[in-house]
Amino acid sequence: MNVQWYPGHMTKAKRMMQENIKLIDLIIELLDARVPLSSRNPDIDELGKNKARLILLNKADLADERCNDAWMEYFKARGCFVVKVNAKSGAGLKQIQPVVQEACREKIERDRRRGILNRPVRAMVVGIPNVGKSTFINSFAGKACTKTGNKPGVTKGAQWIKLNKQLELLDTPGILWPKFEDQQVGMKLAMIGSIKDEILNTEELALSLIRFLVQWYPESLEKRYTMADGIIAGTDPVAVLESVAKVRGCIVKGSQLDITKAAGILLEDYRSGRLGRITLEFPDIGNK
Ligand code: G4P
Image (cartoon, rainbow, N blue to C red; front, side, top):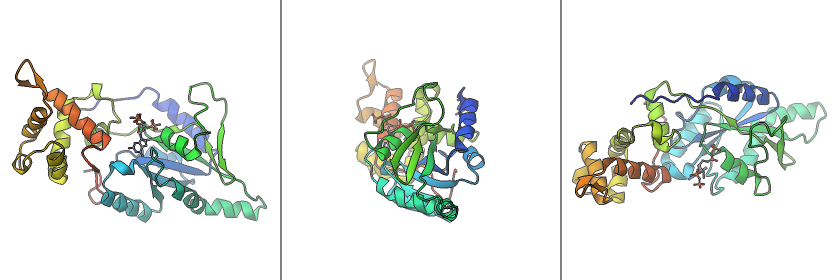
């Protein structure tokens, strides 16, 4: 599949981030735990060099727990601070504050040597669209601090959300566009729902997901669609999708299977977690 998706505001968003990055001590980079590499934007390494970095593996509730742990090790081995979170429920958020202090220990020490005591760490939250930035900011900052500058042009200059004496967040999340010259990356971002369905072939996407599930998580399909073992093992993905159509009653014109509808159901079941906790890429094989 050839994914054609080029967001128009890319340059503007990048310029705004360059401006904002000067103001902060720490970058909190949100990744989708189901696709930690594909949801990374390599620009952030260049934009954020010399800044402390905290990676949040968000939507950890939707990802395979063994893979979450493996990804934590992967990023830690590369010198990053990492916390796995569920921004929606708030799980894991309590662990962030001590890790922030640890990640910014150098800055805190430097301040202390200069006689500056208790200056809060200033952080910016960055990530690709739909990774959960707004949800995270709202739940981390608490209900009282809802978005204030979400409309373009409203926020003049930087506004800060004071979380406590030790931490302030820039109120506008840095939106990074995903990079997917690699078609596999585009496909995975589409599977998790970060690229709009209208510009993709739903059936092709569902078939790719089925191919992956048959190899790595066959029981998820068997359980959700009550399929016999035989249907999954070694079967052509088209047959699996036809089974989904039958089980879900996707029928048109009397008796014909509505494959497009079945593909949509399967993708929604995956994205919402109804197929189980499934990670689409693994540390040892990376993006492949
Ligand atoms: P963004 O600012 O980075 O673009 O993302 P946003 O916070 O709008 O979140 C995108 C979607 O992801 C939202 O779902 C949000 O609820 C969901 N989400 C964020 N963090 C988590 C998480 O840790 N776990 C799970 N399961 N979901 C998460 P939505 O469908 O757009 O809205 P709704 O379901 O909340 O109504």
